[in-house]
Length: 250
Image 1: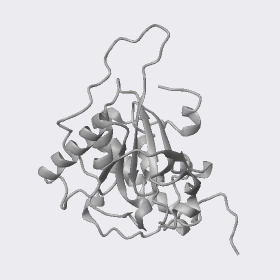
Image 2: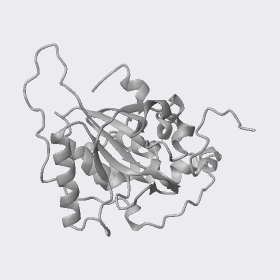
Image 3: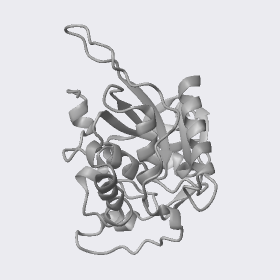
């Protein structure tokens, strides 16, 4: 019999997410590059949008879709980044008909758990977003898994919407590999965005709403803490949640 819960039901570590605050879930950490560390800034980047704003108009926003394991942690990191106006959890890589959590969790849909990061390019560049992604959000040397989660739905991928984004992302991966920023070659793929499908409401803002849940405390809060330590000028103590970004921008 399937329990009907308004929480994820298939993610590895679910039991930990449901544990009372204060209990420890000892998730294995077998990969050295899961430890956040500051990587070099990109040598090639999209230029910041520095032109004057027209009176009464808002600065045009840009976005990039990132897959880096469980979307709870990736979303939680970017909700604390200055210049990010929204980080939305969802699914990318498969068909719209299969963009549903239990189906994606089978690993057979082509989807990856992803986060659409919308940002103000006058405050943070694409390269700045990617530097944070590689420094604190994931271990980019792993294939089909992050933390305790295994499967193609947890792969590392950057989904680009045009040749300029593709050039910045591929050049940055080559730069980091050449600099030996990680102990093994980067496995992160760069592919054209084929559609982004927002995840169910109970996945949105999961880290912000459940900071003491076992899975979050062990696997994801260290990433948020590393963001604050490694990128103090881009750290926002107040997260820009999905519910807040739906009505405001900044």
